[in-house]
Image 1 (cartoon, rainbow, N blue to C red):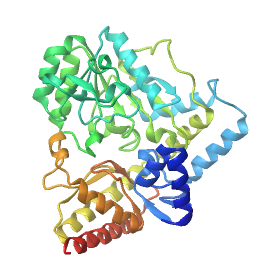
Image 2 (image 1 turned 90 degrees about the horizontal axis):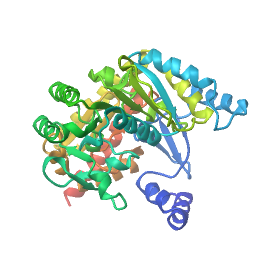
Image 3 (image 1 turned 30 degrees about the vertical axis):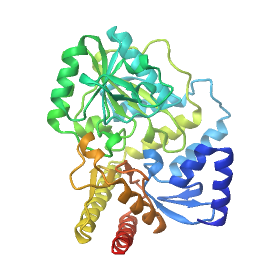
Image 4 (image 1 turned 45 degrees about the vertical axis):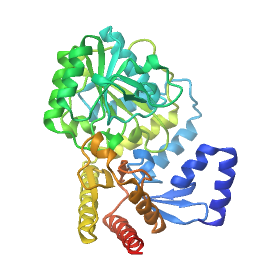
Length: 418
């Protein structure tokens, strides 16, 4: 790395260890523009991390920058519901007409708390059922792992009380029989079944129609509420998110990620219009106006139907290129994709669930990701983890990414011959 980057990392390791660890895994950035980020030594990298999925429109997008400038002139601070929030809800209602009402929150974590509390209050039940591929995010209750029969769980990280874990059942991703068995045991006390539609914990896995049907029908038969996690997929897979793209009808959906445009964190909860729900009186405080205006600017751009068409084309181009490189260099490099969300892994069998995920060659991936970084392309340090294309990525940028992948594969080939 460059001199200034090394100095900053040394300072971070001493005073801000979390920033230091993440800086080593990715970068401590100085600036960004379009689909490229720059470190403190002004070295440019083609970004495929996408700010954890938040950066759909590209860095420095003019519409988002104009929203930030507008927010700075209003003189408003957090603490009040801004009039612009109603403009945002109108846009949300236009893009997702099946949902009403909406609650806009300052963070995804608060959105999750609100949604899960509502499910428990509405059903009078306590248990949650999740899938082992679900994204854990900032939700304490999701940081659990199965430790016994029928999905009985225990805390995944220290500091989570055992009694919290006992209220969550974990079902293997895609396993209809296991899901049916768990509901047969705890369905009478299940408040919600939570579904991350692409199993982001395992990278990107497109669910089968049979699995989605079984989850939907089983949840409703048990009298529970189906909660759709749209924090990665919302507005990214389609204007209507995974609900539209994959045909999922949920009782309540949680949004975040793309909604803030990568400018500011913001969350949202939406209830199915058909249910005639009222969210309750325990709503969190309002988000700051900058978050509201950034969200409105993002959704205004997404009204253009060509945005998602372009994202699909670039995603298909990248996936086809990775598959061609894998064949050319005789490497078990796989690429799974749903829209502009993709994940790559070195695996001799497709990654379709927790068992195949555990067999991924992490050592080879680590070498590959480091070589890609040396070639100017940023990828996830863990495999398969979700990576992202943005609207700012053009076909030439995807070609640059594939050239970086090829350079890395050549380096691996040379190392393995010695």
